[in-house]
Image (cartoon, rainbow, N blue to C red; front, side):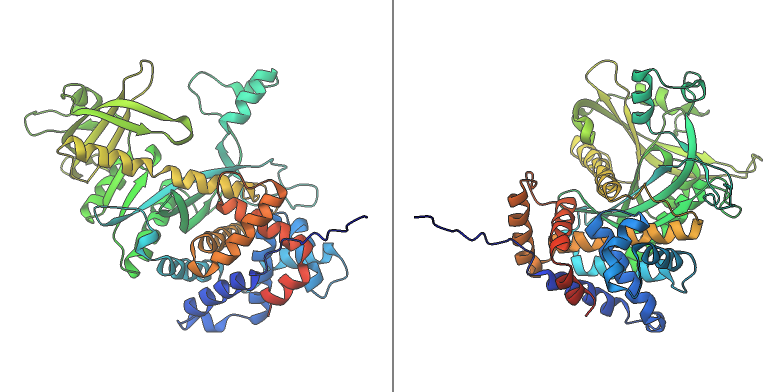
Length: 468
């Protein structure tokens, strides 16, 4: 006797909870007067765009259009893609202000218990990421990517070409010379969440060929202060954490004068002053004279952990823009050097305003800097969604598209941590296990993958819950 068994399909039946989470964010962020003037049609397109990016994990307009075309009054997917392009290029939609209000609401929704902190202050990380793009100039129809500039070429890509023997002379360059290609730079700042998660707070696109954005340093500072201002509005004090690109004397002095705590990586080839010396001395030489405090672990993220000896010194840094005698600014800061016990590896030198008196203090500062890898994890997830594979040409349209990617990431982060969506996450785990793609745990990227799998099979259900 043959027994017929009926397989029960696993689905995200709590998908309405995700839509309710988005509605709650929109309602709470629209409490101010600015949110009341949004065109409902543009807001609807934005909602469709947001879900399309999450479900398809792509920024290509044709891919997103395949998801949203059935919900729009269009005759083809190409027409839907053109409508999305129009929204990015020309629609009257205050994307930056709108996104900032949503991100502020997201921070309040998470609460302090979900935020990584040190000495009662949350950790704010800032870092640029590059998007390498082929440049065709203006193209045959004058439709080339707008204001495309120069960016550093990805090391992995260059190394692959060198192994294959296909690297050209321009790419090889001279020893020590930075290898560049065409593209854009995007500066992001955000909070570190418990478990090394990342929540974007501010970002801005930069190009070296943009007529108004003359300096990447100024753009980085603008993004940093925007994020700090947002946190102050919601009642959080922060420690700013950045890699060596942020370790500039001028910025460090400015932050010290504002009373802002910081931990930045810095190059030790700068001149500093100490009270018992008349002349300035190289920081590297000054650190070499200091005794070791003890052993500290340097967490390098994907590159692993290193045992290091640590030493510290307090000194004054001075900066003058004009170079005239007496025209300068200065600040006293602490420097920390982690010297790897394994030979042949460079030291990690940090500048900080945090107290560094004991070995325990040094370990705490090293742990704060290690939290910087949270932003790299966030970039890895968003790159998987096509963050760097956009084909939009207009500079402002690219900027809008990247804001949508940021908000999509934030929504999934909230879904991963919101107590009301526990059932939604359980269903996502079962769905991923059926596909044998779960991995060790449910992450932001895996939850988005589960949404995409469910979306492909239940588009009508998603349309009903998402656009209701």
